[in-house]
Image (tube, rainbow, N blue to C red):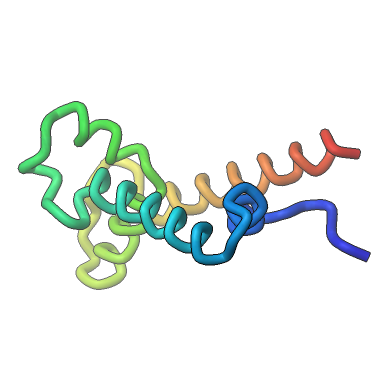
Length: 103
């Protein structure tokens, strides 16, 4: 029996109709998020709007988490691990809501 919930990767495969197109689409999306978060060009060199949008991405949270693990430095008022935990709980809640909506 096939699971009812599908992850984002499976949705891309469904929309793109081929594995190669889905992989390239996921790669492009990840590069955009990495750029917005300041992973390719440091965010201090990006326009203010891009900095604000980039700070709200999950990629920025992960980069802050890795920075915290490597150096022990906090970058904001709310500790990084609490932000990551809140993001994980939000994703879990969205997955539960999507599953209940389908039933």
